[in-house]
Length: 90
Length: 416
Image (cartoon, rainbow over all chains, first blue to last red; front, side):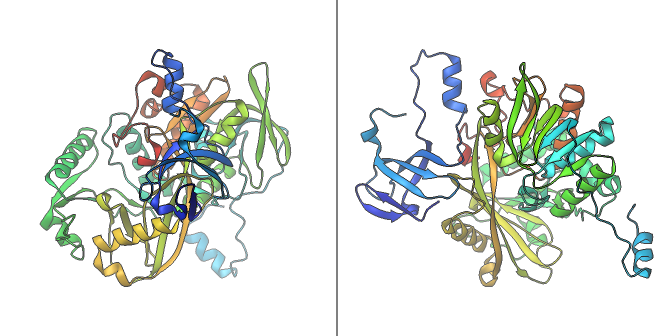
């Protein structure tokens, strides 16, 4: 994991200020979506080796939810955006 | 060649020129009955038990690096069977029994040391939880003892018993737990499997899985195509990468876990001691180095390295538990890639493809399971039926609501 995350609101900040939630690529299904979809949402993960989008919370900063795209192999961070910019999220 | 005190003596007389490599470096054949993907502890022990217990010797173990380069050489070498849940306990106890006879079984000195594992508790609630765990262990025929504060103080007088945040009230102890020299486990299983005819092929990365008519027919590797009757995955942190080759989505995230070793010290810590409340555990190797670690870093990673913040946290927790550690110098730190499952328990099961088998999801607890994992996986591959102690480790247990959530934290891999 890179040492700095460039928060779109606060600028580059040490990653210890942030808390990870997990995969940002999965969307919460509708309540009546059925067991298979809910099972996939709760339990199955893409777990890519390479580029990966995740939700991080700037817990010790602006307290906004962010979408961080980073590389799980090199730990480089590509983009950081506010989660609300992505529309409705999980 | 069988190793013995006599063979050491005889070779010493001959100037130690008679030793042979412990296993061959064969050129892969065109076809094997069974191919195992991953030459780590679990892959090698699977091959060993396939050959020894089930007589299946036309087997290849494909390892993308070298034997011992992955998690089998990166863990903190602890063995124990102090599990609470029905699905876990008999399995880990089978593993403990196999550890106890392992060196005689595979004729290799793995330095199995049953020095006792202590889990410290710091509150009445934690004591009650450990009492329950200890009782569950005893009901399964596993040894456990609940020590009070004085009992722990007699064994480990240097702990900070009056820590302001986590005063030590006692510990749950399993005397049969301990440590094993992890590289010797890999080498012993490799040698044992090789001597029974298994081909261990190092520096051979699986790049694709070839299927025909819904069955696996072989693997594309960096050394070309190799055909197989059955394909068994044991790729640990890279399980997702391999499962992707057959469009199988796993309930797994890969996370990084760090471990550390200090400079060599005189004998100091006799047992394995864990400080769960502070995220720290430690033992002392036979060379004198303190071997210790904490929790996973908490983010997905395939890099075998972690963050300095976790190093700092582990050091703080260590000093909180043993103040004398404050002046110990750390020699090395390293990271391993953990296949963190959604309930913290492993998977040993068949898959949606008839002749494809899966062994994954060991989180950071795979080393202690090495013998039983190989034994149960070999049983599954050979007979198509799960071994009775491993039958709870099903891939579909998440869909069926049969999770084995030892820590009770739910589907959140970075909390296990």
